[in-house]
Every structure is written in C-alpha cells, then in structure tokens.
Image 1: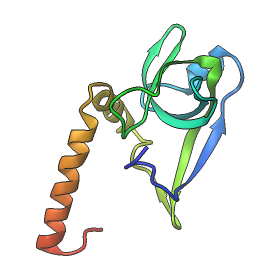
Image 2 (image 1 turned 180 degrees about the horizontal axis):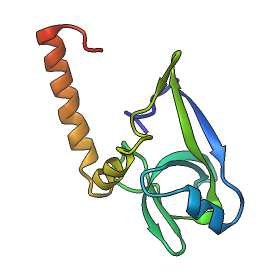
Image 3 (image 1 turned 30 degrees about the horizontal axis):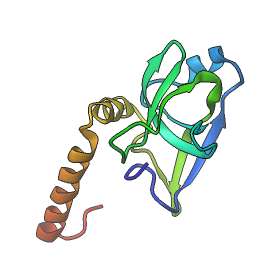
Image 4 (image 1 turned 135 degrees about the vertical axis):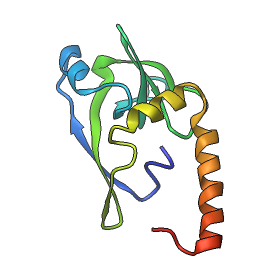
Length: 132
C-alpha cells in the first residue's frame, strides 16, 4: 500500500459485521480494507476500487493489477480507520482524497502520478531544503 501505508506503520482496523448489508454501508470506493486473499489465504490490506453485486474489486496502491479480481462482501474483515507512523497520525489516503486515489488506481495512473510527485519533491528539497 506504499506510499500511503509504509513498512513499520501501525494500522488500526475497525471490524465490519458479518453479512453483506453492513459491509455495503461501511465499505465503499476508496476505503482501505483488510481481507483474506482467496488465492493464497493470507491477510491483505488494499483499497476498494470498484463495487459490484457480488463484492468489491480490490487493488493495492502500488500495483498495476488487482490482487483478487473480486472479493465477496463477506470476505471483508475490516476497514482501516487509522494509520500511525512513528508517533504521528497519517491521514493522507483515508480522507476524501481516497476517491481520487481509487479512480487513478483503477485507471492504472496512480503509480505515474506518484512517481512524478516524488521527483518534484526531491527537486524542491534540493532547491529549498527540507519540506515538512
């Protein structure tokens, strides 16, 4: 889930109640959710980029392809509600911008946008020093 969730970050996952209806009300486009990957039975945290009758299309922010084509509604275990990096809370990726991130991710444009932003950040750091 880099760059929004990084190695060493502590995430808080709020459980969703079993059954399709509660998950539909609490999980939507752009939310970061935890689920068991049906391909390898491992716990995964990725973003919802699409919604269908049978479930959700899920994709990591740092991948070109979905991890699982579809995750059933009952397969969603919880939603990420907090990210902590060091002693600070991280908000980027969980607020209203999550919709734009999901759209860019689904269109395969998120990684190019992130790469350009990283180049710009490095350039600005060279010119102006450390950015906060």
